[in-house]
Length: 196
Image: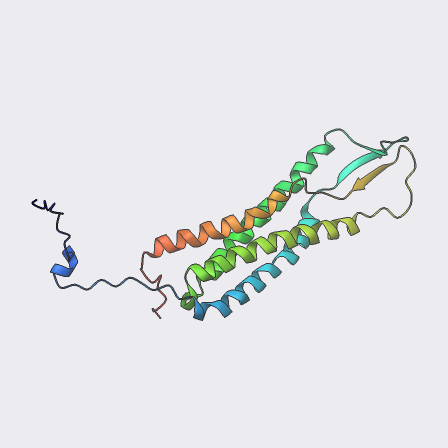
C-alpha cells in the first residue's frame, strides 16, 4: 500500500514589509499605568452631574395646573402639558453639551490617551447623567414646593419631571462619540501619547 501525500499550500513566512526590511510594531495598550488616572476620571466626571442637575432645575419650565376637587387633584392648563417634553429636551441638551466638554477635556490628557481612559470617561458620564437626574429632580422639587394647601380653582406651578430614565445616556454616548472622532482625526498609532 502506498501512502498518498496531500500537499498543502506553503504559508509565506514573511510579509511585504518584512521583505523590505521595515519592522512593524503594533502599539501596545497601556492598562496598568492608566488605572489610577482612570479612577480619577470616573470620579471627576461623575461630579459634573451636580451642577448639571442644578442648571436643569433652573432651566426646565414648571407645569401650571389648576386644582380641582375629587380624586384627580390637579389638571394641567391648556398647552402646559408640553412642558413635560421641554424638561426632557433641556436635560438631554445639557447632557449632550456636557458629553462634548468631557470628551474634549479627557482627550487633552495626552499622556493617558487610550481605551482605559475612554471607558473611564464613559462610565463617569453615565454616573454624571444619573446624578444630574437625581439632583435635578430634588432641586426642582424643593424650588416648586407647595407649602400651603391650595384651594379649589387655584393655579399652581408643579415641579418639572423627567418622564424617562433613558435621558441619562445622552452624555456617555456623546462623550464616546467625541473621543472617538478625535482619535480618528489624530490618526497616530499611539494617539500622540509620546509627543510633547
